[in-house]
Image 1 (cartoon, rainbow, N blue to C red):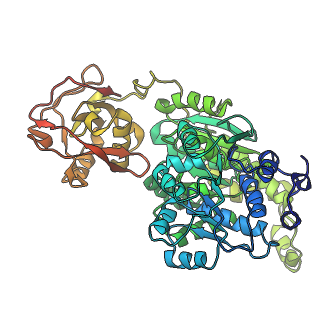
Image 2: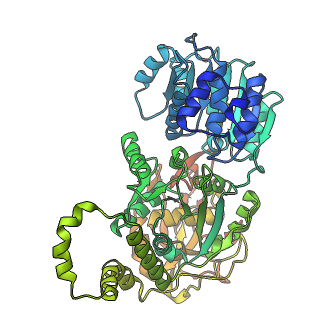
Image 3: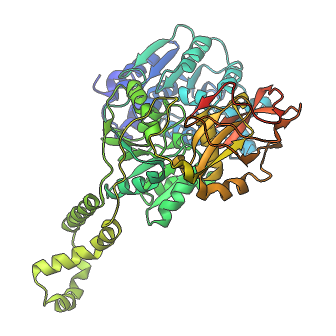
Length: 595
């Protein structure tokens, strides 16, 4: 279908569409809207972020509910407060000519009392985050017993964020005969499970290929050493002078750190993560939409509410823990028919993940080189020349031109151009004239292999730590925990060997004092995490023993089993209790995960 008029929408909605300047429906809208208008059915719709999914379920819901009734008839669940507010505003725009429609946003970080008052006034549609909606249900502030239409938006992301139990509880408070519309960018097993559990013979709509990335996005990866990750980010930014990007980090700590370093280095950057207040987040997003911020450094969760169509680049400063999340990240660019680029910065140990991502997005990821200093200088020079050429003359400077010409009168055209360009060009040339090559090459030995980063054993210290496989660690989780806790580069932690109840790792000798100081009296949820220098080097390039008088929970003591969570840098309390970790000298056998 080529026009919205052909979809069967009401005159009120068509008038709003005309006001917003929408001309033709997107693929997901053309497939979904007629189906939802014609039938009372459950639907699973798979389409990438930025393809117009909000209108695909918003238009039919607005047209089907009874605006004269004040009862809640529509419920939309979304993963984050930013996305919740975005959907609410869009629905208000769509319904501007429908008299009596009231759409209320329910989300954390705002007064629950005020939200309850808005619901009591009569809200036909609630747009909510799962956590806050559960809170309001428990307090009996909302009545979902007459909901006719329920939307699970960004369902895969809600499940990734651990909302399965909340969604289950919320849906149990809605009628069995309602229509459930599930919208998702990917179709992992968890989404298939929720569809099977809560939906009856759903119609399936797929735009493109399941889990595949959008065709408007070009994918590239750059391989560097761990200590060169940040310099590589700067070079990628400098090589694209008009960049307007989202930079993704895995943890809130790294997000804040990278944003602060970019600001210190003179870039227009800002951070967006869960530790910011709602007011701070709103200010950051306002600055980003106004392009006062050109590089927005964000966590995956915080970025779910970003709805900006002209983002030129997505930069994966670190890959996500769940590789499927890459699809959501890259979907931030290439929206509304625009072209975009998704860049990945990887170390040699992470390069194997590129093949996995290619299978998920069903697209080739091109290997590219980090630009050299000279290449960046050339790019900046040409960009400056184009900027000067395209600048419109301000007539208000005319009265001042005679004096300016008098000052510059002794310069030829060539000299004038050279001096004008040198004013801006000099700073890049001075910075990059002796810059080193950041590119690395080579692969790794697979998941159990080691980085091909050469470490000098004589210049490293071997450490013992009293956590291991019984605490749900493998070498990757332990390395991430150490990197985050010690604020070290990935390559500064190596030879990580995980045993049953203890582990070993190496750092350069220069980091020895920092490691010991950090883990002095270090506690996590009441448990001491002890680190000591091991007496022996790793065996066979990786294994190792170390002597210790007391480790783990101590002789016969028990402590809660913990599981490291890469997203927030902390531990989650597990359901089981860990076994006695014993004491005395650690043995050199048992389950072992090596890196």
